[in-house]
Each structure stands twice: as structure tokens, then as C-alpha cells.
Length: 425
Ligand code: BJ8
Image (cartoon, rainbow, N blue to C red; front, side, top):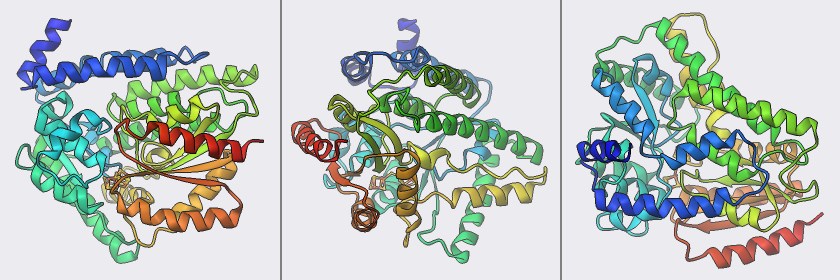
């Protein structure tokens, strides 16, 4: 299998030397962060396997699909309506952009004062170290933040990129603009795949993605229980894998994991003592293998019970409303659903602090940690409003600004331990 992988990566024009370095760095990190945990649910075995073979089986599935004439569509943002991709018999893949490894590669081109997520994703393409990027026929970007939209122009010099225009406001005019973008995206995907998106196919795709969202909702609901039956790190990993695994298989695996967690809950079995501080993380998304903050928090004796982020609740909280098999209604339901994602790129975006307050209560958290990637101005500015709002509600907040490097680990640990000491029950 190892040889088969090497052959596949060669066909995908991967820089094998750098890629080897990337994979050999991932193993020890995964061992330290994940495999060293005690009392993990057996259902996490699947996710360990996925990470262990991160550039193997799934990439082979995508290649097989392409050999049979199918297309692979890569995305960087939860705004891209994946239902339309599935409905055209293409496969969407949420690209990871969570490693420091590719950041220096990107810094050869991009300004250094760009957020790590943007640098990491651009570096993957520039350094040819990600087979998912190499295997995709189209990358779909979006006009969310300035850094991303300008990076997509540069990325387009290496691979075809299509950019969706996400509005910055939530007015009726903006909603109409977004609806037009969804219709245009349908045309782009039909042209790419040479497949017509019918109402029947779209209905099936809506059901497919909604089922995965419901499974993730179930997983998160189980995290509301005390003692919590799964660590924040494990729940984060399961969510991260949902971005690129097959949606049907992913739903099955999540369902099996939740069945096991149900039993743990019934037996009162938790991964941390009932009095361990419960933390909600709110802010920028955390793509694989960005486990830094969770690891520091949980190593300090607390437990992360919820993520208000695009690798958390913003990814699955809302379903596309099921409609009768009428294409226009389905497309409208899709555009309405996606406009409900409260990304800090919107102004105003008061719904996000509202969400955090609501989630803090639902998950009975002892404190919120606001996670901000350095140089991400939208989330940094929104943190000011968030702080005021949480203060009013009496919910303790710690604001963290960091990147993907390990340099600030010690400092973060000290600040987080002090915060946990303050909120201790
Ligand atoms: S919907 S959060 S996935 S844009 S952290 S690149 S905002 S400078 S990732 Fe995001 Fe879509 Fe919004 Fe979600 Fe820019 Fe900030 Fe970097 Fe960001």
C-alpha cells in the first residue's frame, strides 16, 4: 500500500521530499495529543485510522471517482453550498489549512502579516504537499475576509479557482445577492461536471448533508452532559474529518460513536471529573492538525464542551429546510440556510454574541475562550463586542490571539491555567 501511495502522490505531482517531512511530523503530534488520552470511546478508532492514513485511502477514492469521469471540488469555507456539488455527482472536499508546516512556504509570496489559515492553505499549493488540493478540479473560494479573497487571486495562477461573493451585511438586498450567487454556483458546477442538477438529485443531496448535520448535532448534544462522555479534542477531530470524508460513511461513523456515548452517559462514565471546568471556545475555525488550544486546555484539567466556530456549531447547527421537490424552492432554502452562518465577516453580526451566550447556557460552561488567529481583524474586532456582552451576562472570558507555531505554547499555558484557577468551582 505504501508503494501504491507513493505512485499516486507522484501522479499528483506532490513534492515527495517535503510531503515525507509533513507526514513524519504529524505522527508524533498525533501520538502526543490524541493517542496519549485515557478512556477514549472505541468509536474514535475510526478517526485515528483516518489520520493515520490521511493522504491514502480517501485520496484514492477521489482519484477513482475522477478516473470514472467524476469531479472533485475543494473548498475553504462553510459558506460554499456543498449540496450543489453532491447533486452534480461531484465530491466536495473541505481543505485543511491548519498546519505551521506550510506557512513558511506561503511566506515566500504572501505578506507575513496574513493569518495562519490563509498562509497554511496557500503554502500547501505552493509547496505541492497536499494531495487533496492536487486532486481537485476546481477550488471554490469566497469573498469573506480581505486576506482570503486576495489570496484566491494568487491561487488561481496555480489551479482553477472560482470565487463566490458572500455579502457583508444581512439585509434583504444582501440576501438577494447571495441567492443570485447560489444560482450562479449551480451553473458553474453543472458546467464543470456536465451534469444537470435536477430537483430529485438536489433533494437527495439535501437529505445527505442534513443527515450528517443531525449526527453532528447529536454528538454535540451529548457534550452537554456532565460528566462529559467525550473529550473536546476527540469531538473536534470527528468534526474536522467530516469536512473531507464521504458524507454517508461519516454519518454512519458519527452515529456509531454517539450510540457508544449514549451508553457512557447512561453509566455516568465521563472523560473528566464532573467538577472539571467546562469551556466553550469561540472564534476562528481549527482545521486539521490545529489541536493546539484544545490540547493545552485539556492538559490543564479542564474540558472543552463546545466550539462556536466553523469547525463547530456554525458548520451544522442549521439544516436546509426540506421542501417539496421543486428546484426553485430548494435553491431558495439552500441560500437561506447559508445566510444563517454568523461569520465575523458580516457587519453588524450581533447574532454571534447572542449564539455564544445561548451556547454557554446550554452547555453549562464555566468560561469562554475567544480564539483569534493573529492578523484576523474581523474576529479580533468582534471580540471587543463579545467581551462586553459576556461581561453583562456574567460569563468569564479569556481572549487568546495565536498562530500555528509552538512558540507561544508556554505563555498560553500560563494564561489558560490562571483563567481556569479563576473560574474553578
Ligand atoms: S464562514 S470563519 S470558514 S470565512 S481566520 S481566513 S476570517 S483572517 S476562516 Fe472562515 Fe468562512 Fe467565516 Fe467560517 Fe480570514 Fe480570519 Fe483568517 Fe478566517
